[in-house]
Image (cartoon, rainbow, N blue to C red):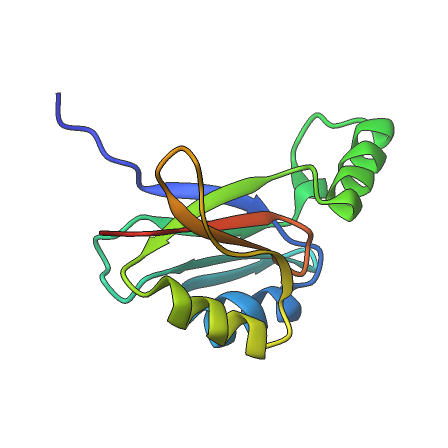
Length: 136
């Protein structure tokens, strides 16, 4: 079977802050930026157009959610416990330095984990956890 990851979805609550983080600090290109009814869906990813992309979406726009569910999502995002993604790089220290210099919220400095991975972690402006692994 030939199957690959194409998109991952992360919520955002401020499109401009999300762009400043993913485009300006992380260095991803904007592949698409779609507005509808005052909301924005922004697709970002590495410069390689065949690489998987992240769709930054307004979480309240999901159909079928109740007002209570929307409030729960907002509360979980504020705590940083709603969504997470793991990225990878050959230059973990360089990426860490770039994100730290941008003012991004550091969760964990580069660390050799006991399970064999060297990684660091940040929160994006919406509270999503981004772990970044060192590629060997």
